[in-house]
Amino acid sequence: MGTVLVVTSGKGGVGKTTSTAALGAALAQGGQNVVVVDFDVGLRNLDLVMGAERRVVFDLINVVQGDAKLSQALIRDKRLDTLSILPASQTRDKDALTDEGIARVIGELRENFDWVICDSPAGIERGATLAMRHADIAIVVTNPEVSSVRDSDRIIGLLDSKTDKAANGERMDKHLLLTRYDSARAERGEMLKVDDVLDILSIPLLGIIPESPEVIRASNMGSPVTLNNAASAPARAYLAAAKRLRGETAALPDSSGKKGLFGKLFWRRAA
Amino acid sequence: MKLLNFFTRQASAPVARERLQLLLAHERGASGGSSDLLEALRTEILQVIGKHVAVDSEKVKVSVDRREAVAMLAIDIEIRAPSEALLMEVPRKVA
Image (cartoon, rainbow over all chains, first blue to last red):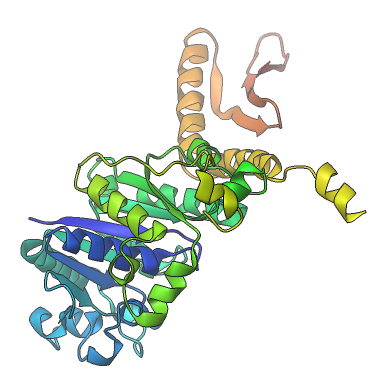
């Protein structure tokens, strides 16, 4: 039986889709069998970020409604054969997703993959609550910025009340993924620090993804950042986060802002 | 002038941190958790007071007022006093 992850945030544009693609690829690079599921019906983008946009035939709604089999809708990644994507529908309405249909599809995916990673839509409406409903673990993606932190706090409240785990009286396992972090700016007091965000949200830290041009470069290429440039700072941070998800210990990147000679020379750019 | 601004500019992150802490303390109280606490307090206080004096369950008010530094828990109980024809109000405030 696989583990179901939801990547969620409340606020849009903080890096849910980027993180879903990167973590999914990172787990698959480690030999795990992974499927990433796009729940953003009407605004699907996971297929585009992963470079599978021209291979979409059937989508999540077709499978939920019984118009297509799961095996027909799943797209296997061309670079990693242990990675698959289940795209969202671009044309249909999110109301076409039924509770029972989603439960059945997630149950089926759980039997066939080690990890089922659900990319939640922004907001706190039905699409977001459906994406989190069956999760075992939640990854809360947050930027070090006031509106993102506030919305994450709200999402944490929903994770503790609107999920199967909450309904069964269990605790949802929640982890913080801090994205677009600029340690130099945080050190100068221009941006919330890791510890500030951890203090306010009080959930454990899964990883810190540094602000980096590599993220957009990878999405331009239609490739998860961990595949596009595995040696880059954001890729290393995602690979370490994936290790932590598997229960391995991986050192968190140094967030103190102390830098080596290279970092000192390029202190503005080094994140 | 710009150089002076650069050196005297205050760090904005601590302001962000403080504003968020205040705001979220309010918002967390407004949704779920805290209202359950108030209901539990109301019921149990009513039971304790009810052992000694007659209290109308409708006339017990429990509220929390969150200020910047402290939260005020206000318990307002109206006790019937039929013989004395005195209506006592016992407001208690606990910080």
